[in-house]
Amino acid sequence: LTATQAAFPRNFTNISSYEDLVRLVDFNIPVPRDLNILFMGDSLTRYQYLDLAFFISRNGTWFSDSKNDPHFEAKGGLTWNSFYTFSDEVLRPYEMLCDCTRRGNNPETPRENRYFCDPVYNNRLVFLQKFGHIPFRTSWDISHINEHPNTLVNDPQNMSVAQIMNWTEAVENFVCKMTPKPDYFIFNSGWWDDEEFSQPAVQEAMIRALSNCNIISVYKTTTIARSKERLDEKRERMCQLTDVCFNVSWTDL
Image 1 (cartoon, rainbow, N blue to C red):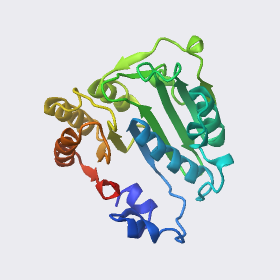
Image 2: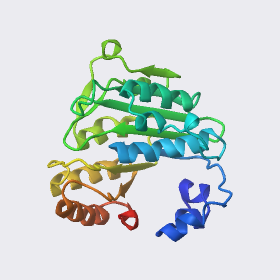
Image 3: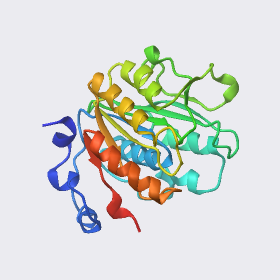
Image 4: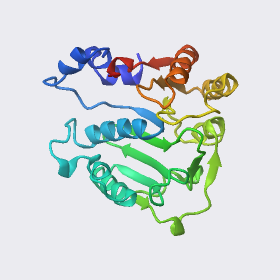
């Protein structure tokens, strides 16, 4: 029995339709314990991280108004740095690090990496941003990631020289060197076309790297992408390669 399976009841983890989701409205979901999960991808994956982080930080409750909704600023048309500041403050004191900056709306130079730690329930969540073909960037020193509590850095002038990595390099040189390492690596390239990630050799190398450092690979399917044909091919391959296929294709409208 894994920590994630133990953390949530079966009727919460076994969701495969809209009807299953509706039945959760009045369900008393317990606060999970002993989670150690890393999310990597674009905004589709970011909001999955934010939802779970909020749920844990609010003792098992969801946001009931826009003032506490960690998505609110992103939907409000304000600057990205305002969104980073707002969402980080909502998750304090548990979101200990936010290595987050973007200049204007240019997606070519973004950096959004978040580290959440709840010592009471022993939960750790990490989000690493990876936009399709755009390299993963971080200013974190992986050996000191636990030593800078409650730090938000969103001014490029205050950031150290970034490490720049592709998918496989990020797994081998960053994720696998974290202390403690995540138990689960949930990932998806999302909306963005990614020639590198679509190559079978790259996919196999990435999954092999996760296996070599004893991290469970979880591929979260995408419900929307720029190339429908490429999306279907990628979904089929990744669901065969990974330890777990988190199939949310039933949400596709």
